[in-house]
Length: 111
Image (cartoon, rainbow, N blue to C red; front, side):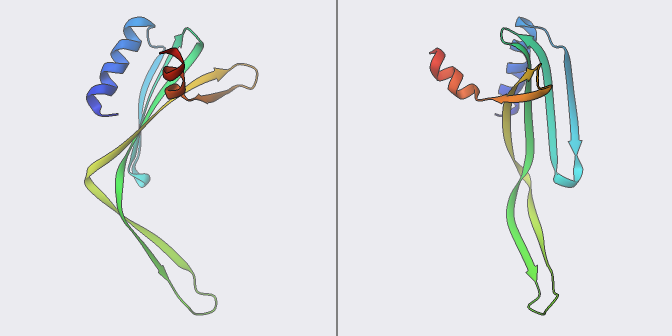
């Protein structure tokens, strides 16, 4: 989901339900940003989460054929290309954790 659609979605959620919490977390060692919005919807407490990562262009594996040698992996990341993943979670009060909901499936059933 591109930036424009994501911010439009957040505006709609805030307008319809109000936001309980909104935060952005940077994870520099993984070149990742996690944006989270928590709100109370029709199905209870929900969390929208968008993960943005740099696209991996190449994976380099370096290893030794000697006994006791180890291997390492290095990744080459794109400076311009990003991938986005949006997930919807419902708070499970009994188990006390966020359970992921397949919102694509909900959209197909509803329409």
